[in-house]
Image 1 (cartoon, rainbow, N blue to C red):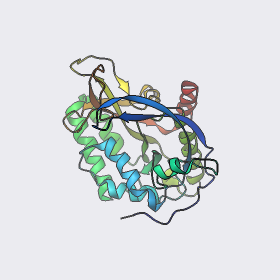
Image 2 (image 1 turned 90 degrees about the vertical axis):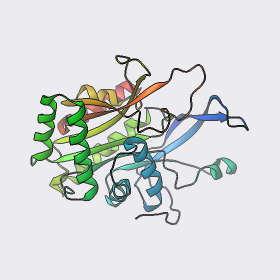
Image 3 (image 1 turned 135 degrees about the vertical axis):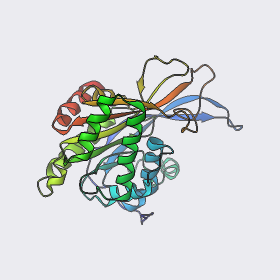
Image 4 (image 1 turned 180 degrees about the vertical axis):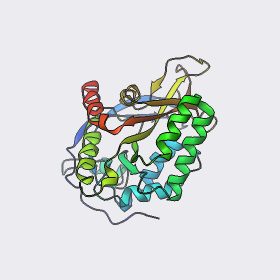
Length: 285
């Protein structure tokens, strides 16, 4: 299992992005009062060994209690040299030393990557992911959707599992840089490894609805993922209320309306990826 390594200097893989990040305000007694906004500069870097725990934690918030070896997936994403980025806070000489000390260099605020399902078809965590997709589709989708999923998963199609995770309080704007970088990396990588010449992407999105409202309006936790949903050829949701230990962000203001968490499974054609990114760019600007 990968673990922390010595500190390394940031790479120049991504342009830095300055974003507004919400910061929880708590009293000494731990009572939640609200959020204030702080300015933070982020940059995408190649995943490294020291990012293992941060990547795994982001995967936990996506998969919750699903029976999948997230440690193995985290290792695979790190070892997949040249594809994928982790979102980390960047610093310069003018940054306040106390602010820098509050955030470890190993802290990961997001990850945008792809897991090659085709080349790792027999790897235990991928076998578990296939089983999860088959189980939730069997319980929560129509017969037609189930048959279509089986055709795609069980055929010789080249599949990638798209991961687009970040802390809930980081704005969608950052996704443009991360997704564009991933697309460009895949385009370069498939020239030397055709298993990365994906035909389909599989994606699981975090969504929620007002609690107690069966037909309530759905909200995507990562707002840009609604565009992926609109472009998908397979699309269904399932309730994860019994798997989540807390609400969307873990805390609620007294005047807030509580929500029920869901997961939405998407499959979309890989040749639509660039157009989706273009729409995401227009959406977040």
